[in-house]
View 1 (cartoon, rainbow, N blue to C red):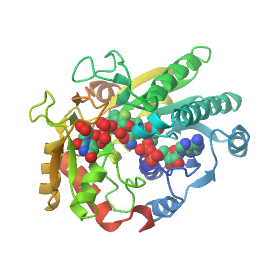
View 2 (view 1 turned 60 degrees about the vertical axis):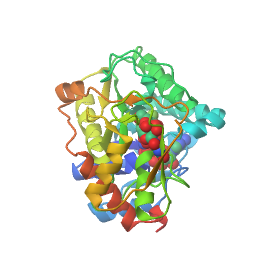
View 3 (view 1 turned 180 degrees about the vertical axis):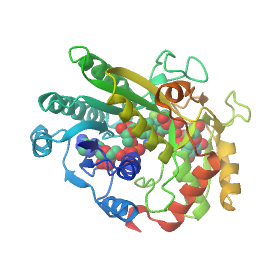
View 4 (view 1 turned 135 degrees about the vertical axis):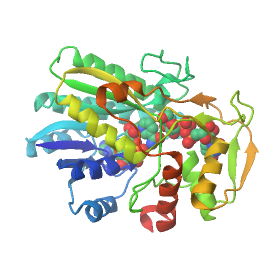
Length: 339
Ligand code: NAD
Ligand code: UFG
């Protein structure tokens, strides 16, 4: 039996592929390489000794996607990571974001239906909560207003998958709402490789520590948080990968649509992250306080009790592990996978 991993050469997908192989599963990757590189497959092989089957296919190309299912009738589950994910870019390229993220999911569901594949784990995001109505955020917390097309696609896809389940009650759909994935594989062979100047905090911090960027701009220190800077629930990407294995195990046993927050349950401010990075790595992170970034919320962290109680999943790594692993990846690969 195989598991189709869409977006499997991306940041979270590649780490999940490694964990799946190490658990004895057989992943098959589909990715159009729009935001990842084929060399990731070599890194997966170096870590696990196995090079997973790979198709360079765009999920929006129904014919090509159908052929992947037709060639691999042993596919029994899908983990759907593929999607465009840059919040700011989604504001300037809304049509591209809606088209790519929605059409790829519709095509995937069509193929799953045609080939009788009934287990799906989907990468959703804490962004669906918008400005959270309560903290910590529970799965039952009302969804808020999203401020960008990217977040809107996540909400729409959650809705689409919930509707797809209704006439297909033998399906099992897990909607995993990730908080802030960071860190890298402990080997230093896989990590986050953003194009150009990073938007997200940790890759930016790593590049400042490395001397590739001069200074971190802290986006605001006037939020109603203990030190005034934004608070987020950072989660190690390997912990996140493990959550997919747990969700898959459950999907094989039960039917339904289930939602899980995947976070540590602990929020860290920007300045706490800077301090944690400095003490975990012994490297200095120069910063200056700047204005707020439009669309940012003050605080966002999970109540991850449900994932623990139902899936038996709990984050194992702490912020020091996340910073150390991110730093190792940055040092070993100063120009990402091109290094
Ligand atoms: P990523 O960009 O590293 O990986 C996504 C992969 O999907 C890339 O390899 C890209 O080439 C591929 N892809 C995109 N569109 C495709 C298409 N039409 N057909 C085939 N492949 C396609 O991103 P990631 O950080 O690994 O995120 C994985 C998923 O998790 C995404 O859906 C993202 O929205 C979601 N998510 C990410 C975060 C985060 O902070 N990284 C937070 C919450 C949710
Ligand atoms: N920040 C800075 N300076 C930077 C970058 C970020 O101060 O250069 C701050 C932000 O203002 C925020 C915190 O660091 O307070 C985290 O910002 P990120 O950009 O790393 O992460 P976000 O919480 O804004 O968003 C991320 C993903 C989204 C996802 C969301 C919830 O980018 O796709 O987490 O999962 F939806």
